[in-house]
Length: 377
Image (cartoon, rainbow, N blue to C red; front, side, top):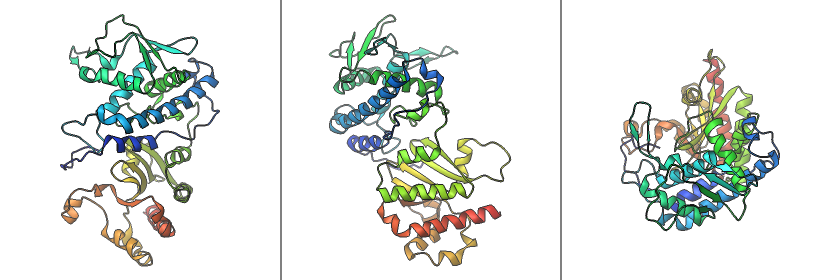
């Protein structure tokens, strides 16, 4: 989230941020799926799929290391833009992507040979303007050291040096002795992150550190499978409720898209009367409700009712607490209630924990009323 709401940002400890990101790593990765032709040239399909699972396991170790040792490496910025704003995590992602995308995988698959790290070097754009490296020189050695702490071995650079200096023809051997096939997974996922994703790659949409294997698939992944993948940390009954709400609203004619902008959103919009193709952002802005995963608020339903005046009698049948939040409505906290910003403009938030189970039927009915009156408009 950005800081344009003019609020004071209180950073969460890096250990808590790492725990949150660890929960976003893909867990239920299938053992067999058809690969995009772009990926098939790296290695045999079986090794690529095994490598992806090995990279998933590496990410678990990586985030565990951040939990225990991250405070020594991940320093907060002077003016954080969100509660999870630790640039070090983005630096590591860029470095991993450099190694995977630009490194040449040995025929044995046991190491990568890297001759350049674009994220660590300055460049000049087409207009002759100097561009600073994505990873500042002062942070580069720390990134390599942290990856070494996580099991990487780098031959060709001195990790005891105060700072790194990359020469034009310098060659660095990158290995991961505890499970070498992980490098095949890193290679595949890095190519997917650069070439196969449909959204622009930037720090707030890091598919690499989420191990989004779906990008490697020849066919698009069903949005329900993606949703289930991200709901993994929730209690089973809550996950069942999410799946039920999703399927019911899809059956009713709603469209669901996933949008990542720091937070992860699954947005549900009614588009049946629309006559043109819409982008993911267009669909997101028209959402009636959604599921949000954020460091600030956790896992939530976020509902944006617009037709409550059409079913006031039905609202009176809901439990008092639910009636209260519906009547309270949503919008800018400052303008509506002269309160500090709680991102009320995004909608009415209901935590996705076991407390929601007691009102699950009422929420289904509520969304049903919103949907039916949206269809009638």
